[in-house]
Length: 468
Ligand SMILES: Nc1ncnc2c1ncn2[C@@H]1O[C@H](COP(=O)(O)OP(=O)(O)O)[C@@H](O)[C@H]1O
Ligand SMILES: [Mg+2]
Image (cartoon, rainbow, N blue to C red; front, side, top):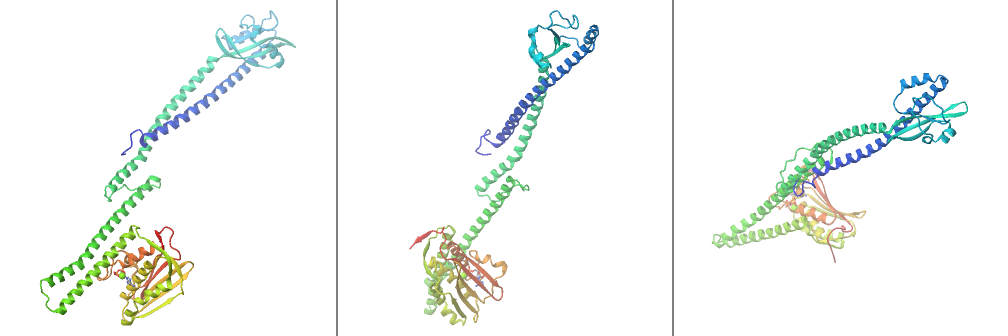
């Protein structure tokens, strides 16, 4: 991946973390099992020594008086240098001659006499260490001596060494397996991230047609991958839209300019002599120039709205007065075209908004209604205030708008006939949004349409507000 050193990359860090985790866990587990094993083997050894001692003492007491028998059996049974006799009564001999003796100081005879049971102790003899169990040997009530059964500590330790060796083998195997698994999993994780990074570079360079391998999983990286594809598609769409916008603007600007240039050159070359024709030509030039001016103004408005560089005033607006103004602007046209033109206005709802912009929206909606309503049709304007929202609706008996066109007509430059710019509704909608409101459309194809502007009674908090 660009910009990350090999050591800092996830590809190295993740397996390293895996390994560190397993090593730590292994060390802790090994320490616990070694301690457990140590105390377990020690306890078992003590148990063994105890029962061994008990057996020998029993053997002795059942054969008391026949000293030769136990000696022979003992020698056969054990042998080796790990069973001792500690004489208490001077000169007393048990298992004559064969059992090595320990001095009296080797065993805590007092404690042994007190407890009467086996006594666990450690023993050192000829430089070797032993774990040992002493048992009292009594003749009637008298403590006659002690029998000590011992086991070299070295023997206990050698089992521990075995265990540690086995643990080390298991541990090494575990580390290798975890390491491989870590590398594999990390590869699986980082590969799509690498692909995403490359795709991001391509998008940054302006190539939106990136192709990512399809992400089917529900994990975070697959989700990211899908979101990224969506984002690239949206960017491509938005770039396409702005390219279309630019082309539409140039086209719209060129049409009136071509008309103006044609008339101007005709006038200059004196092709048109007739004064009425000349003034008609001049009228066309004036009209087209005005259209150009309007178009440039609209495009600027739209660009500003799009970039949120639009200042919205916040002033008290009497909506009834405002609607009255908008209404009367079309009264003459309604009379001329015998359109049944009515209004129904709620008395004086006052809102905090930008009056000029609200008037621009309503006039736009009324202009559309008049453009599309045939002679003898009906246009009406309603104003209502409900729950902190003001609603202005413009209804007509025009051709209506088909369901599939209802979203499209709000796009810039989308116009059903060539005479319009297709910017009116786009601007109206952007303005409504900038004022914290929206435009809703209901339409019955063949019967008419109803555009409703909904505005909050107070301006939106995030609008760029210029106090007046
Ligand atoms: N009241 C209406 N009745 C029927 N169609 C309408 C109405 N208002 C708008 N339209 C449709 O929406 C399109 C876009 O409108 P608009 O953005 O104002 O652009 P223009 O008026 O310049 O065509 C119109 O060309 C028309 O097809
Ligand atoms: Mg219009």
